[in-house]
Length: 320
Length: 287
Image 1 (spheres, rainbow over the protein chains, first blue to last red):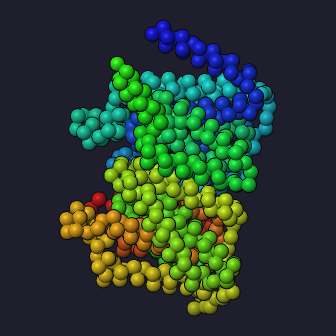
Image 2: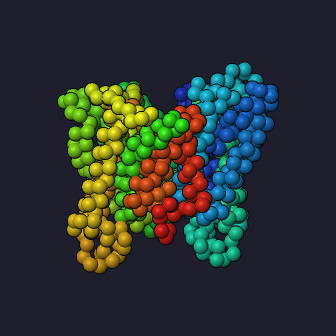
Image 3: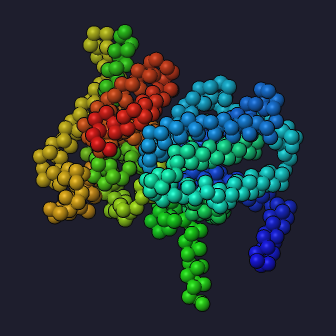
């Protein structure tokens, strides 16, 4: 117990000191890691715990990003408030998609396709809305003002990203310990059995979808004010949805540490392949992603974290 | 009126190729219950192969379907043997992730090989047209449609008249039964995946004279194929054929009624409607 508390405090202090001592390249890397771990954690609620794979989470991300930016540029509402408007809107849209999917009993492949089609429909609409900048995209003017979610230097972004990740992980932790979480796992493991035992599967899948979508939308606002540019073909692309889901799957979906570990591993791998293979090979690091996905499915189907945990337990067991 | 008639004619002509790619996807799903997420990327490989044969050796894309069909057949068979066959009993999600990995690899290796610029095969008869009343037909579209129809017919004959074809259909109808009567299921699977891939590879070649393509075009073809297969009924080859024509016509009409760049939205709306009201598809039987 004491060891655990000491470890926790040590890790906390390290995380606070870290951004002040590393170079800006590493700051950037850490921000991206936290940010994708956050998105992975959001996806994890629906895809990991409830076992409903979504290949359209880019849709909620984009809703969050566009809502806060439009509210800010046209009505002057601070993105700190706008991000929650975006989360609300994303949750509402998720309920519409979820209603269509779950009410009609679409499972597995059919649900994946429905989420994919929803994101594609949004992408095509966004490309034709002048309000959202169409093909050219939306540029955001930088005005360094923390109340407008715009910061000078990377350190503030680091702490915002870390805070988002902490919030999402806390939400997942609470869900995991609640009855709601137990229902979700029951749905994932055997939906018919869960239903037979009296779990209102429709209701809990809808709730998981809403939580997942709302969290994802918050990440969209962060992206908008970190990159200062939104383009439908980038943020509503299917590859972006893959980017969101691949980290929890590699790390171990349905666990709290899975998305975080997955995000660290993939960020390191991405950075490694970018520096080692460098320019000239535009698609190389995505190709490596693909190969990695294949390897994980074939050799670590439960993800890295649960597999590691299994090894550790076995090692501990054989020592006793 | 002539405008709409023209749109319908063009839709049917392009729908032929759509049918061919969807038949390939449907065949793979029908036999193995595996969804080929790399379908469109296999098509793009067929397209680039045709483009390469055309620019280096001057081979007409309608002739190079023999080469592209064979090459993509081998690609599909290799994917089945090396990867898919290892996880046939895994949950659907895992199979989908695996095929998504394959799709990412194929797309980005194509990107590294040919670069991101749009390519097009400009055949000498590309602009040949003739009129039938108020409707204009252009030669490449007609030939493409005819070839797609011919390949579909050949596949039908193969599946219904040959022993190998019967084995594939038997495995698709009842896998356990096929095993019980001594079918070499691994061979059937490899063959079916290869043939499904060959269909979409050939469809790629047939498409090259009609529209420009890039390494990232694959995902759109994959989505269109999914659309068609679900609309027609998963695993139902006739359904895939009808669905292809239907999606071709509705996209073509959508381009006239809405903005051309919004034409794909019609297909997706159609998909959502089908998922809601007839998830087994237009011609699908039991789910």
